[in-house]
Image 1: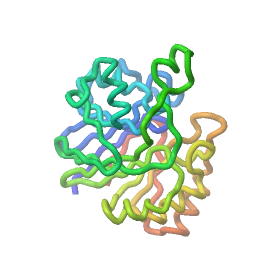
Image 2: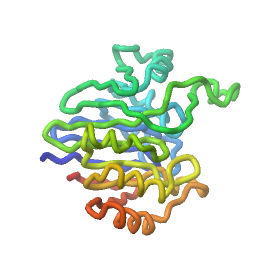
Image 3: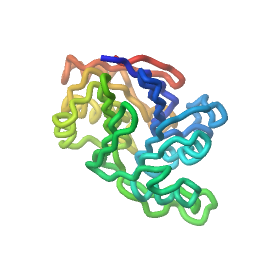
Image 4: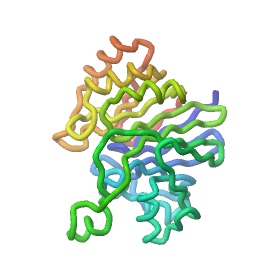
Length: 246
């Protein structure tokens, strides 16, 4: 199995680079992210940008990144529609998907799956102060199936739900990236149960310690995962860190 290089950019933002040098950004919140040392100015290449939902810490700098690099945006029809008002062609520069939909680009098949989380689009009205949020589609997770490589499931913002077992049965993720900070997403207890539902080789926690009200005891998480699914490793990454998986 060929490895994928995974860079944790901070909060819930990741960059994946395949063995064939395909560069994928997931929920790229860069410039205003207090835990991210990478800015839009630092990015010179992206092939695909995936966006899970319209909250500002996930939609983030996706539109600017797509416009700068010429990457393809993969997101819900609602986010793709919003992006089209900012010069990103609907169905030309973007690929709108909905839950259960898939598209293959280069060596990766992207499948949009369910997530349980509220959403609203933090777009122009949010930025100019005329409204907190505009209507948005549902939140989604993504399964990235890399040819000759691992299957990576990024749950995006979510609580634990029973159909994680079905997602695992259908796609057999080797690696699951999941939020653990509590308050707005799963906490440690819920994330450990989610890991047990899926039993991947490894879990990477995210969406914690960016803000004081979203913290996580990773020792507790590791202990709980060890009890519930002993073959699953906890891979803790610091913002700015890069690893190869597997």
